[in-house]
Length: 205
Image 1 (spheres, rainbow, N blue to C red):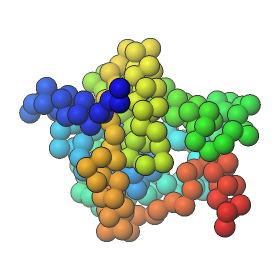
Image 2: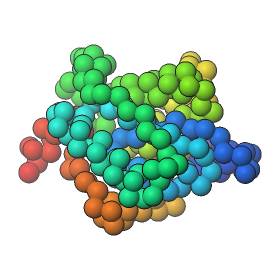
Image 3: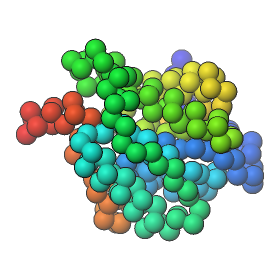
């Protein structure tokens, strides 16, 4: 049976009513963050976590972080959305995907990349007492929302913090994110982020 993650999120929002629970939202880039923040900040007290050791090279990591900060500022959310940023820790990613270098895009290597970032988000959400943790990754039609939500639930149970289910691409939010990026002049990347996706991109050019 296919789950409707948007409906599950709607039920959580209805349960809290006018109270705004705290959520630690892992963000992968500025583009994906726009529509997600526009939506979530209506119902949640949001802190954005920047932890993306998969990004390569470091110049791309820095550029995407700057784009995230610009998106928050240009949307007028700087006073309501905090950013918790970790430095480039590419060795974390290398250790996680060791032995999976030759896996196809979207396969086991990507699963471990999702897992790595969600584990850190859950750890910090637990440490700082957030009600939920979540990720912008489900905004993209290229990402498997079922896989991401399943990982989030498993990791949340292990860490002792609640996962916030999502399928952020629903209700036109993927297109809305592109609109916001264009409107605010936000950098829009041409590859997923890791060196493997970069090499794949170059091969097809």
